[in-house]
Amino acid sequence: MLDTLLIFGASGDLTSRYLMPALARLHQAGQLPARFRIVGLARDAWDTDAFRRHLEQQMAQAPPAILASARAAVLAWTEYRQVDVTDRRQVAEALGGIANPLVAYLALPPALFKPAVEALAAGRLPKGSKLVLEKPFGTDLASAQELNRLLHDTFPEPDVFRLDHFLGKQTVQNILGFRFTNRIFEPLWNTQHIERVEIIWDETLTAAGRASFYDGTGALRDMIQNHLLQLLALIGMEPLQSLNERQLRDRKVDVLRAVRRLSPDEVARCTLRGRYGRGAIGEREILPYIKEGGVDPARRTETFAQVVLVIDNWRWAGVPFLLRTGKALNRDRRVIAIHFKPVPHLAFGQQSQPQPNVLTIELDPDRIGLAINVNAPGELFALDRVELESPCGSGGLPAYARLLLDVLQGDLTLSIRDDEAEESWRIVEPILESWAEDRVPLLEYPAGSAGPPEAEQTVLFGKAS
Image (cartoon, rainbow, N blue to C red; front, top):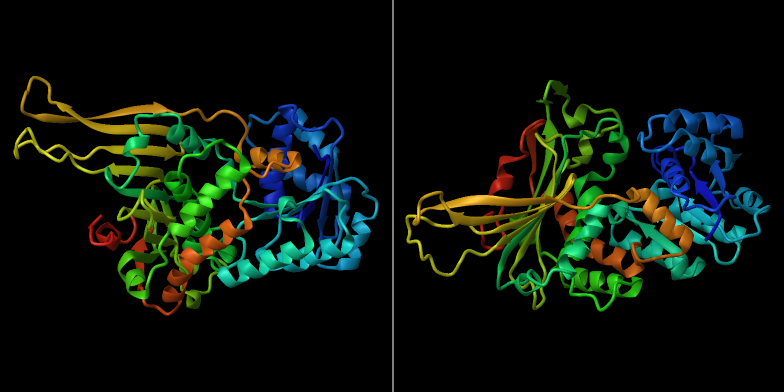
């Protein structure tokens, strides 16, 4: 296991809110070496004591499950160096005293990935070191391809970790266990029995506090291009021969390659975008998105996105996959819903039509449910609807801790491969182009509502939702 972590852009929010608490959790679980080293690099004019005080203040808000002794331990391992992470000479000097393989974590805006990678390459990382990049991997297909070319020129692909923290969530990993260890579902997991799949990540959270970042990204890039397409790949993939890095990543790429690239007409019919206006969530009055600090209304950035995709392969031909995400909505809803086709014959007659079965995989809180039809109490010819529910195992390490441990151990299973990142951009590229040309109107919905009313009438390739 590697025992040195360099964090580029260490003064940012990612380090204090996610990386340091994750390291404390790993230490608390006995998963880190007894002698571990954390080196923060950033432009801020701090010394190590000032950096530790900053981290200590931020980590005081960490979940109570992390013990104070674990937080103190990782702070004691931490040092700080004022470095322009895009300056090759300064980065080389920062690397000068490190001889053993290390992890270089780019906790940076995507615009700084290229100069930071070039500076790292010039500084000659010790052999066996790992490079970590957070999503998004580029801003479109061309930039993702350019970034991959740069990475290929400077680092071996097995040393590059492209992290999407969704894949570290226990609830997302539960999809694999559910899919491939329950024989009763696999024969039904196809176009013959499934009518549609919905992958929904609705949030009451607004863009406040990160609007300046969000305004250059939008809901489609921020959630659908990466997180929700990862969920689509896990739901849609073929069975694995064994659960290993090559098998899992190959099967995910197979699914993404089979997703149809939408034509301009299909984008107009099967996608929707919106932006929240003034409203209320509970007792909170919410400003319109365009009034948030750092927002440029001229960008016409969407806070709500809904797209319908199809997977052109034998298993899924004709089954629409609806992916939806939005901010400032009336409830938090994070669910995958598998809608099965209705029964082929109504033995109960037209007066008692059974509703199709729906399998739900809730991601936060983690729970699985199955809606089925049964006889109504005391009524032979009447039907009732019941929901079978059970919580799913959500123990173990939190997402960032899980992924950091994988990086330190060199396990690429939950990392995004180069071709996988590019395939995700290939899917959303025609949507981005059509939206940029205003072929799809930017709708407005009140904060605290269910989103644009038009979302309920989205055409699912010939089928209404």
